[in-house]
Image 1 (tube, one colour):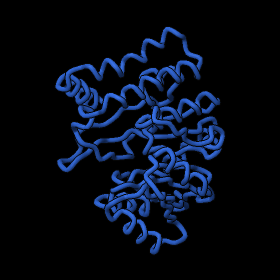
Image 2 (cartoon, rainbow, N blue to C red):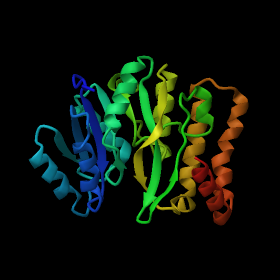
Image 3 (cartoon, rainbow, N blue to C red):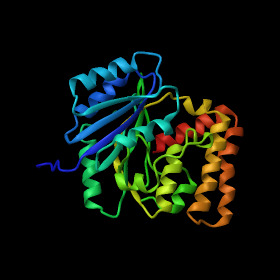
Image 4 (spheres, rainbow, N blue to C red):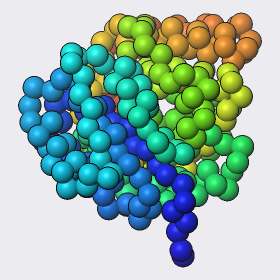
Length: 272
């Protein structure tokens, strides 16, 4: 099959203290079967050798890698918006500096957007791995509806590819302490509220490096943030007001003893 390379992909990456894994992540992009891409990296004041590794890729691939730097630590939302300002692509893709993806990820995502003109967001299933191997995976809904947002974010943020116009329409990521760790959830709601829709490819084209016990240590304030965004979804997507009760679920999960939540969370991932 001959790939059409006429459309450009801009990969936006907020990088922070990921020196140990960044090279492996960037190599996943370099090896993509779809080759018309650029990578916009923005370092958020790393204290390790992240910048030096990023600079090596800029030197080796000067036409495809760009490195921006924040003067102080500003967080992911601000950092990704900074990348968006210089992105030249028709599509905006994400990648995190400690994750991996298949070599045909871009090819399959861009083909899905080409075949589905009514779709603005495409993401994929993903697997979770650590030093001992793969320990879980997701099973995402093919075509999420507005009601899907009551359960949680319907798209994997790091694995997504989005039409640039959708980002422009919602003015990128919103910056607020209320949106820490739920910035993508909020972004998708904004897009759906503007009439955009998305889909999930039903294969794990993205691998997230994740601690098996990370969910157990999730701070309660982030569960409050999730509750806030669920309420935002009910309001902005004009869902039935009775659904406001769903906003209590993240808070209640935060009150569940860690060992019980651990069992529930691992079971869901394995079932996926």
